[in-house]
Amino acid sequence: MTRPPVDIDTPSDRGTVQTGLPKERAFRTHLLWNYLSFAVVGGCGFLIQFMIAAFMDAAALGVFNQVYACFVVMSQLAVAGVHHSVLKSVAEYPDESSEWTDAAVSGILLAGILGFLVAAAALSASSLAGAAMDSAEVGIALSWAAPGLLFLAINKVCMAVLNGRRMMIAFAAMQAIRPLLLLGFVATACFLKWPVALLGAAFTFSEVTLCVVLIAYVLWRLPTHSARNIKHWLRAHASFGFRGALSGLLMEVNVRVDVLILGLFVSDAKVGLYSFAAVFMEGLFNLLQVVRTNMNPILVRLVMEKRIGDLHNIVKRTHRRVYPATTALVLALLGVYPLIVNSLLRNAEFMKSWPILAILMFGVVIYSGFVPFDFLLLVGGKPGSHTLLMLVEVGTNVCLCFVFVRLWGIWGAAAAMSASAALGALYLNMIVNWRLRFPLLPALR
Image (cartoon, rainbow, N blue to C red):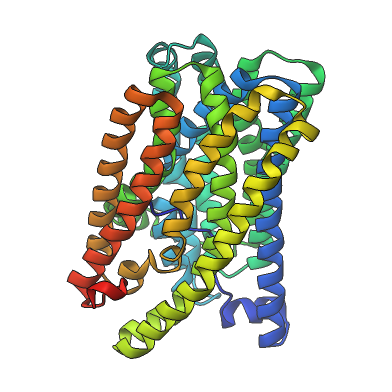
């Protein structure tokens, strides 16, 4: 049940030079800005869910989250890993080199081409998707969201340029703009009582607006470039990006598969009830990702130096801290959830999602101790093994969701996600033990 990585890099010396701050002060400043950005992203996500649930209804929330799931999955096809190639390329050259500027410009051009093709395909298929999910509103909302895929692909590459050049304050600020734009659009839609299907336009609006800001900023920061190597970089980005695109796609499918499969078999209202509970699960996972983000540099060093004893100690210490903390947070959330629903939403219908939350949180507790280590194969130099892990996890998740949803509806989706989390911990340990000779589970040492 690997969650998608948080796009926050630890600033390097290059970023320190650009800000003019002393090294330690620059590190703390960049880290603070990125944690603030993370807080904005998470806070806006919760507010969007609450607004739709409170001012519209469960069916509207179901439509929004089905479109969101489709949009996020298709975004991986739209950018096709090009942003990873751009990040790597622009970080490798000094400021005065024209190579990194050519790499950036060619990445933006390639993302625009791919984004246009995927956006056109998504627009053409929107009515079919609505029919498959037995919801005309989902189909219409997808048609409003589809053009945003073009701009999202460009935005991902521009963000990779900022990240690769360690412009981390700008990176954090831009990262916070998207959810604020989404929140503003949703708030307007709720206040003016727009049709539910127009919620899909929130994604296009936010990506277009962010694209204007990002392109202006990136072009302003780009030095003059010769454009002599554009063709070379187009080929390089396509080769590198396409080879790594599958992993990103699998990550997003693994996170969104429950909502996508529910959309095929249950009503929009039931999807809304489920997704309202699921947003709390995702929020808790995002908190655990902060631990992973800080752990990754340590793990890289320990794996490279083959310090297995120190790795064992870190796993033990992390488990001793993460499991009690996660359990306490889950119990507190389950206790206050009825108060949140009854006091803020004042809609008794959403209390039906409490058992769903409880089932989902069971899986969160099981997997929480492994979140800090679920990129261990990547940092250990085994990207192919990481992709294998993702394939096994996604395959398990899809199969369980199909079977359990058919049997038990929204409760089946929650059970499938929890079961997948438990199995994901087992898969992670087995493949890490096989490829790195390092078992994460004490019983298998």
